[in-house]
Image 1 (tube, rainbow over the protein chains, first blue to last red):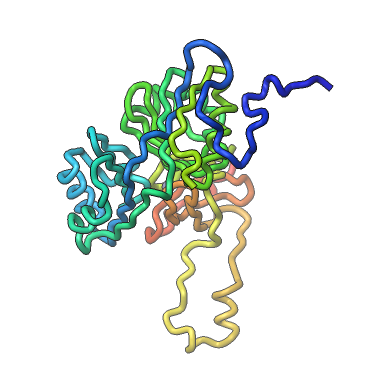
Image 2: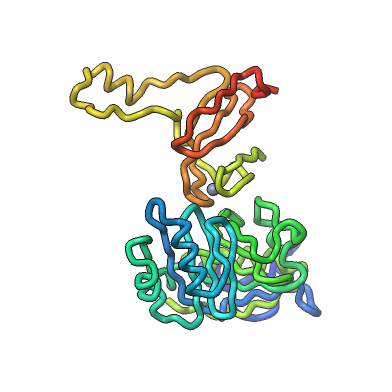
Length: 207
Length: 99
Ligand SMILES: [Zn+2]
């Protein structure tokens, strides 16, 4: 039988460990760069019955972005508000360590707030070939002509639950439950190898 | 792959959804007033039609919400979907349910 091990970018990497930082697959300029070095503070806001519009407006004013009660990502320099379901918003911040407390003070009895910073790993994907990579695992249409900057979706990629949004022309962000970090990174490496993939691993070994 | 339209998220692949049984079955307001037969009827008996069926679905790998659908049980065609709490749309099987 032919030996395919030299064609396997994941050869020798234990399947339950996050692959280490480095270059995978095709040489040359990487088609996809994957980074988990940004570790934002994250909180989930769930509006109480009848308060979705009010909560969206309050979040928008507080973070200086346009927030609507729909699947979309409102992005500013330090914060992102992502609609994940009716009246449900994920809030990410790089500057608010007590994001949960800030949101409680802002929203009072209009919403339930829960701290989620350690729940998910945030993958930043950049490069021309990101849509081609994601197409190997996604079931929704992520064609760059259809899925525009600011669009968001909570869906399944490679059988793993993902909330993703397009940050800008060639940048996508994906939130994946932390216990799936190794599996999801393996999907990214295996699917991105043909384009050349650079992995900058920020959270491996976090425990 | 079957495409199902979540009233909140739009058209999505069927693997994001879970079936939730027949729709529009109201829990009796006072279960203790029912006979065993009436309670069993609420718990177990379903219409199981050949043709259009109003049923609950949950967008479990998306927004997480329950909604209702009218599906043709012969062709598996989803005629329409609508939000939980809304009335069953006034559509009969002849209006394009089966192909
Ligand atoms: Zn949905």
